[in-house]
Length: 262
Image 1 (cartoon, one colour):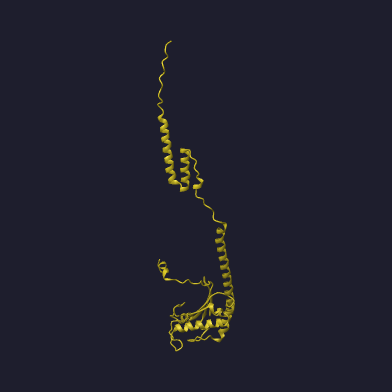
Image 2 (spheres, rainbow, N blue to C red; image 1 turned 30 degrees about the vertical axis):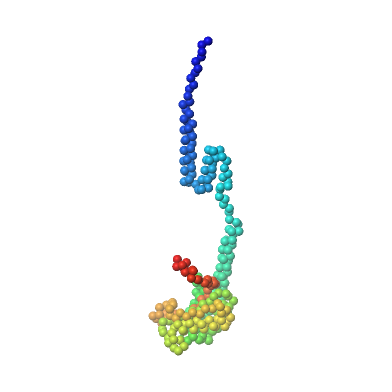
């Protein structure tokens, strides 16, 4: 019997495709990682990196432990600021209502003098200001209240007694100098006039710790002092009812100086 020729075994010339496919896969993975680094945050990058390692090495990796956990703030932390803001608004509204009532009462008790143009009541962002022409309060060059005005000033004091607002009484003069044994200059005259009104308020029951008297002389005119009408307008006593309660001060030490200079 004739011997059958053994067929030649053919070499597999396509084995290189396996290596090429592995290379392409790794290259693709590399570009995916590079793209992920440029577009995602650290947490997402860790998820992607662990997924790639798990796919190529068949290793189970617990990624949950590596993820940052962001806990929502407690409900109490959210509600407290809103509650504080609402409480402050309620307090401010009550202060505004009280100040409006004070202004209304002052307008009523001073109505005759307001009609004569001797008194002005001004509402500002700080509170209420009562501006009184000194010609009805004091004689020229004097600091004693004229009897007809004592009743009116006590009526203002009666309005202020039940309130808690700080009160500043300012004395103002024109630029005509004065030089007497009692008042060497307009500074003394304006200060004593303001103090006279303060003493009347205190004697009428207004708490002394709420009262402040200041003399400005002719340094804060409201009209030019060129004409007689302007000088008469500048001679005045101003009663400022402040809606803001003064805060307690904080003592500064030498160690705070660098912070103050910044």
